[in-house]
Length: 253
Length: 253
Image 1 (cartoon, each protein chain N blue to C red):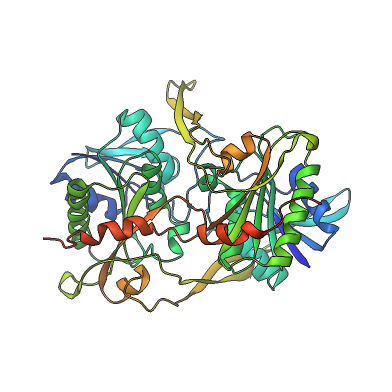
Image 2 (cartoon, rainbow over the protein chains, first blue to last red; image 1 turned 135 degrees about the vertical axis):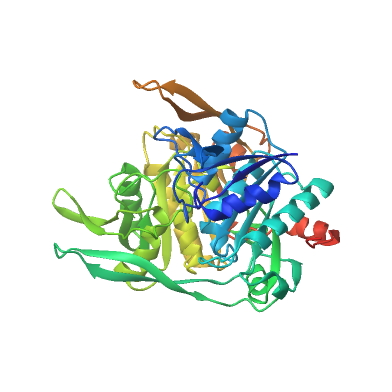
């Protein structure tokens, strides 16, 4: 099995190192990841400037290819110009921080996997729900088992699996649940500060408005120490509203 | 009616100028847009560096607020720190280039409108299907009429309308159609070049694989000279696959 591993925390992050190590046990892994951290870049792609590919070594040994672009860039150029053929699966992560509920929209980790799905390659995004992860080993084990499940069962073209692992010791994990995207979102606050030249600048902060109360949602599942697996896709059509606004009189007069 | 106008081509683009002008006829417009072009940045947001807000003047007259971030940043900081209250509607555009089919995923224009939807504000993204738009006037007229329709009928929370206008003279437009996101996507090609230091670099190019053949899709509708209106949302759950993979045995053993 040929496995392309990417992420959004950058090629030097401990999460991608653990992921590559775990998946090497079941397939032939190629790491193609951003040269620098690309959190919250969403599905950005680089068009106006060119990309470069840099070989990345750990202790003198080749580890993977660093691309000076976004996670989605890594998948595109990785498949087209580095691998030159589609891998059997793309796995993105292991991300520092939950990619549940609204975070899916902003996530570079998920966008790497989504770009793979767009390119008809089965894919998985995997995250641990903390920015201060102590140990990626259990998440690596989860990644391995989900990759095996996808290899056995296949995945519909255009679908990816978004996996979130609670940041607790393995023995506290209650199980793995199939979930839907939650509805929790951020109440953004921009902290206003003044620079030495008396000009204002603004830092994004905020609090999560936690509205999910159902183990069938990603956000609530991980809060309750379950691993969450959510199938997502890139058809954004709102079919309910589509039916509803059929009655609108669409013209410019 | 309070209208927040944004885009991804930047505050100096002719498209946003025409949009602000058209919508001024039916409401109180505030322009809050990226300081520089932000095409294809998707739903990126700025977290690791602070933002600045710059007042933008045209011929000495105040036109709007430029934010040195992404389209989604403009909506967040625009509503939280500039307007300090939700507008009645957000309109993003008028974009240079189609935001149909897979382009929706990469689009900064759509992401600005989507960020508004996340913040419970009704919103519209509007684009003209060419990077060489001759005249934004008809698209401005379309924007005005769709804003009026949304004001009259309301829009479900979490839904936005993605509007695409063919780049043809108004008299050739055949009508306005309600559509779904098409399935056409890019066959990416990275052109490989060599710099003066004999290092390789790669430019993204590519051809669209045009698979849409139904006037009910955005891409085919605009190709056939119809204005396309697609309701989209940010629930990415793939419900079909959700049902299908209920039978999978989810565990790590």
